[in-house]
Length: 341
Image 1 (cartoon, rainbow, N blue to C red):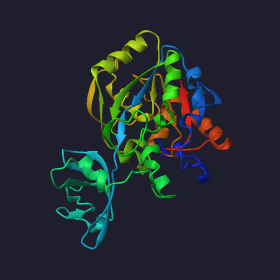
Image 2 (cartoon, rainbow, N blue to C red; image 1 turned 90 degrees about the vertical axis):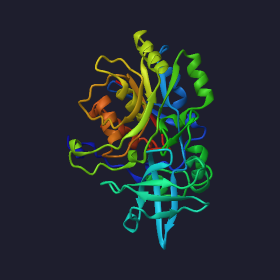
Image 3 (cartoon, one colour; image 1 turned 180 degrees about the vertical axis):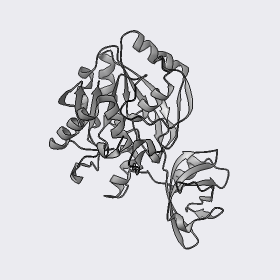
Image 4 (cartoon, rainbow, N blue to C red; image 1 turned 45 degrees about the vertical axis):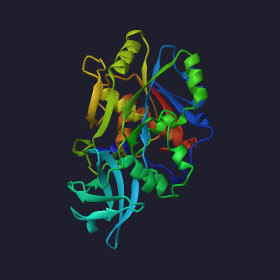
């Protein structure tokens, strides 16, 4: 499909630079079939049915942005995928000043050697020493805010909490599963009281989620792989939800993509552990999920293509036009949408 089909005009002031407070006070656009209605996240228990199950991503964002030097050159690195105990794949700023075998000093006693440059310009970074890389990043790294926020303000202390979900447990993501940022313990209790269950899986979100689609046709776009895991108990539970008439509602496109990677043509979700580079565009037949809660996405992005595949392109174009006209806040710190085909 032509990528231009997924373009739309978004006023810059619609981009949220801070999350709603409290988190569950964010607005929520409910798109059910072809109908659109305004709500807030706190209304979620009344928008779902007893027996439904929300599926959250329990990945934890690490301080994956690093600033360092190679000789007199300034080098920026954003880690996006673990490749070994001490090796991470990284997008590099000022990469023309970096060669394979060069050592980068990131300060605070943290150094890494660049190797294995890929066609996309990324490098593998091998971190020196014996300390776990996670400890090194705590010393030298900073929270990797999305570029559309970082371009408007610097990262600060608030982001260390704001950019983690209440489910964050498994360290390894370089971007938050932002739909879950809207949840609070109070909202989760209200969902439980309404008979709506929840489950967790793990997908370590990579920085590739922010990369623009540069191809003119979706067939020519290559997705970056991300590592994920659904254990057997979770797979069994989600299958049981559907068998009893409930719906599996993914909270965030990361949860959705992993469930769809684990589901077979028979619509059975199986245990999964490994990389996924699934790219969902209109025409895709969903096998593992029955609905999606997600934030509002960039024009021409793979994520807007995904929601258009779920709900239909015309429906999503109309929903986004409504959101823009009614001052909904977009992107990672923005408002939510609940999409129920």
